[in-house]
Image (cartoon, rainbow, N blue to C red; front, top):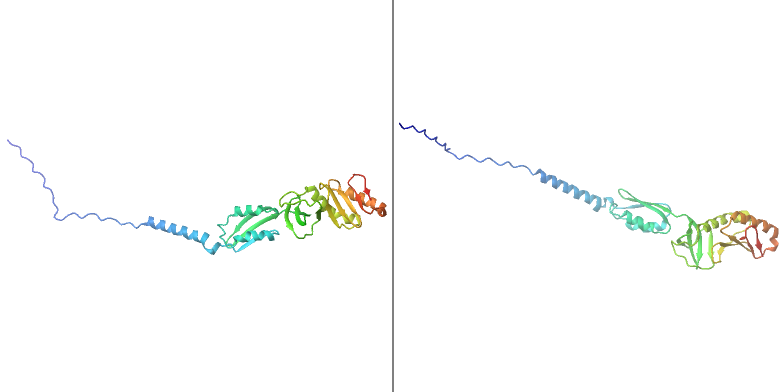
Length: 252
């Protein structure tokens, strides 16, 4: 007997085609964020570096530095953030009279230059030119006139700026001699000169004669010897008094 075959299931055929699912359209927030950040970046870049908002309008220099002011005025009008502080500091520090320099930015328009100049010691004259020597004995600048103690080099040795002319002890001796000579002796100090091969010997010109000092020796002791002998032999002194030998005074 034959088995009955099960009928195959009929496939359901829809009368209408199944619609495709709609694609969801998302707003491109990622792109918007990038555009916003780029716009913000370029806007800040323009404000900080290209706009006149941070242009240097004022340069403040601490300390007496009339000559230095001309060197830094060239950055006036430039952008405060684009000025190379380090290069400017190096340029100023190369000046012989500058001991230290530090530059600060003070937004929006000010550049602050903190300057320390080397202490001025004496005036040194040679070959008709006058130079300021600092307390180290280094020539820091050329001048026309000054109220500092003035020494004339009769040897006329050439002087270069930022080079050692005399030792620090010589500068110290001259400054003290300028302060003490007249108060201790009662004599006017008319001129100071150097004529020997070294700067150990310093000649002070006073009324009617000269006094030769040893700049390596004790100034106070030499002045005491000067006063003692001058008071005793005033009428016999017509040309010079030599104080360079300790404990002795030679005169003519």
